[in-house]
Image (cartoon, rainbow, N blue to C red; front, side, top):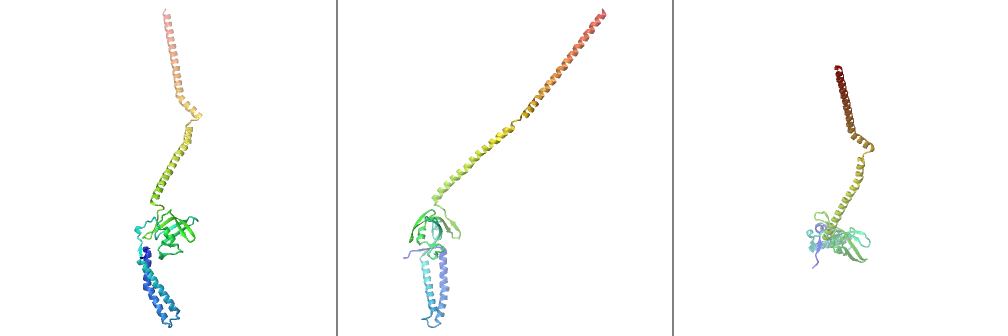
Length: 274
């Protein structure tokens, strides 16, 4: 029993479309060519008849090939695909470990192989070596030219909706570890600027404080003016006190003069009476 092949939904649809065209259109066309060639007479030297018969054999062989392929193939179930690994339908970018050159391969079924477009079969030496590998894995492939070592750089997976899904760059475990490391690095990176900012602010604040102190320190003229303002009330009080004292002295003197005059007048009256 032949080993089951793998077909994608797209490749199966293309094969079915080609088979329908061969059965319905190509068979009819070639039958018409053969009929026209027969009508020309002698078939032993009829090149057109020979060409038409060759084409008919090719068509029938292709019909049989497609029917056999469809019969002995399984359609790829995208629900069971691990998009972190290389599989049929994906595009893988690899780096040659010797030349460091990067090459892109699309892994396809046998009917879609195209060397110019770097579409390789999953059953080919390179394709089979890459199957089920993840980003970061290194594969070693034996070729007629010698061993080749490829490191898988990236994987792209077409979804059933025709969109492209990029696989995780690492396995789940590796990705988790790298995320944790990245988070720690980010936390550290975020914390360092804060410390630096605080330090810078303190350094910037020092000149400002000094300047404020310097500005607050009064000039000599200002000191003298303040002292003079403070001394002014005392001067006024002293002057008022002096003025009051002088008035009191004058009043006392006036009282004494008046008393003396009174005394003299009394003495004069006494003397006159005698």
